[in-house]
Length: 185
Image 1 (cartoon, one colour):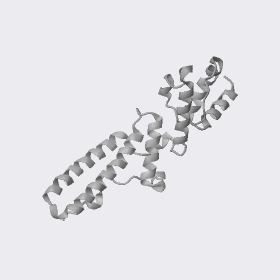
Image 2: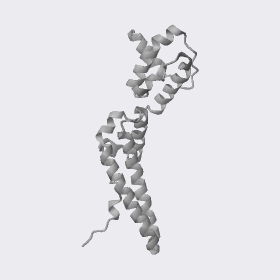
Image 3: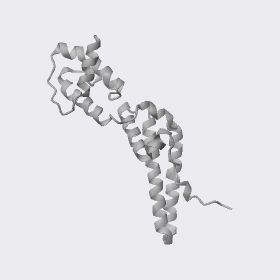
Image 4: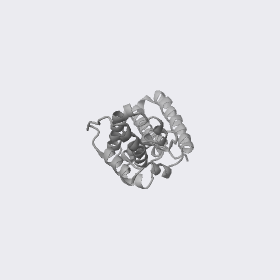
């Protein structure tokens, strides 16, 4: 392999996914397949585990290249997967989400008993569900058996949900609406 194969691979991946991809000849396919897989993995638009079947067959080259181009476009502004390491690990998040669901069930059970405060209970349920969604998205980002593209999409959603400043500081909101807890005296 030559360095210009990697340059050609990068140029091919950077093009519009709408651009038609002609079927390559066997020699061209063999010279570009591995550089394309390497560049796509480096750009985190191809999980290394996908290399077994993405860009594996010459007849799939046009559709596989279009797939990678679409991913490149969709993930252009997504954080790198290494950002996930700044957030709590999956086991911790699972425990927090279990508590969230228990708290939600408690609110749901209490809503049937206190009909006079239904609006407040409904708002607390919505807040709890929103916090669950944020933490569930963080869990997706931390899930190492998900493909790198799925994890990056989760990080992008997480950043959008909590805001750029909180995301940059790896500061997530509480897993339940703590402001709803009453101090017991």
